[in-house]
Amino acid sequence: MYRCLLIIISYILLLTACNSPFVSNNKGYPSISFPQKTYQVFNENAYAYNFEFPTYALIDNSVNFFGEHNKSDTWMNIQFPTMGATLYISYSKMKPNQLDTLINDAYIFANNHNSRASFISDSVFSNQHGAGGVFFHIGGDVATSYQFFLTDSITHFFRGALYFDTSPNEDSLAPVNAFLYQDLKHLVNTFRWK
Image 1 (tube, helix red, strand yellow):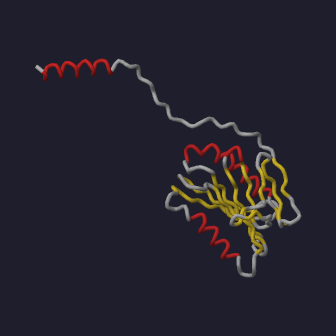
Image 2 (cartoon, rainbow, N blue to C red):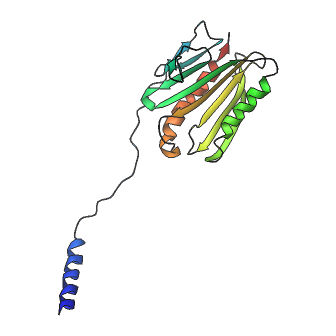
Image 3 (cartoon, rainbow, N blue to C red):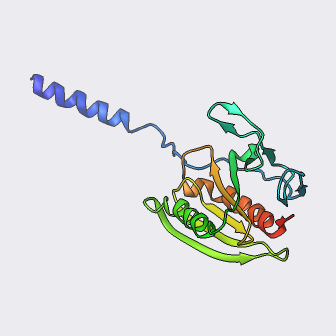
């Protein structure tokens, strides 16, 4: 008797539970509105170079060194606050025979992402102002998709790496990466040594 009653109650619960309408759980990412591409010149006297960077970016040359803010001509950050991204820049005045070491370090920094990268490609470039270097594109769920360095091979070495203030997700960052890639290419194409 109890068994029959239990089966009837279970059957009634099963029938009533299936009458709710289906609600889809859409997954997606928020739409991003990108600013119009306009550029301004970075040309401060204390620096051995100048370049153009986006008007929607901010330069912070008081980089934090172990809790202290010091203005530096060797380190700076170009921040893209509306996109949660920062281009970390370092500059070295080269010592004799240091070029190979600095280039090797740049390749090591790019290859540090090998464990998560789906690919790493490098392309050699030179711009119309006599600056040249290598541009790295790193694919996959990596912390940085773009890195580059510029040098005159004698005195100056300039390196940049783009990072986001979020966990790496190649799909969700793809539109922002594509947008900022154009800005990075503009920076290296307008870069010149003083």
